[in-house]
Image 1 (cartoon, one colour):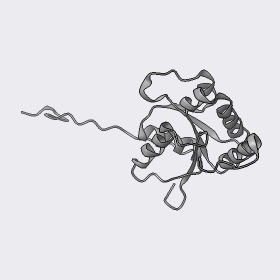
Image 2 (image 1 turned 135 degrees about the vertical axis):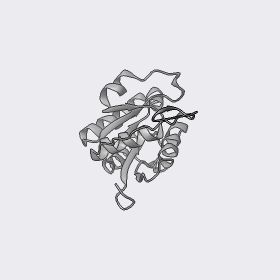
Image 3 (image 1 turned 90 degrees about the horizontal axis):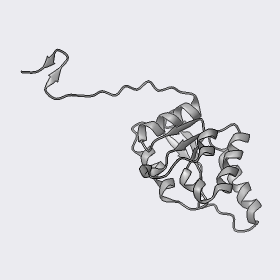
Length: 158
């Protein structure tokens, strides 16, 4: 993944930019040297054609991506629409990543958790790493480094 070859990501939406939808991209923007292209276009709501036009637009958006973020908050509001997007992702072999409900007050819908390859928290590194794994098959071997003031490798500093 580079600036010339960003990961193409789709986030479930109902043709409006919800708080959770916008939050995904705020989190991804905060990751250093992580390049992605948002192929979900909530602003592209079809002017005519009804439900079929909406479905056709979603199919086109999902076909362009490498991985899909599924928002449980949208699933709770528009279950059938999110199920349709998940069906399209499955039909086009696009791996799905669920993000736990923001704030931890709501439960993850069982169907979302079962159908997604990964379930992650609202954490920029977790989200970026899940995208790398599900979109490109890249495994990240990151280590957390903890610094304890007043200590070094030999023990307490006097």
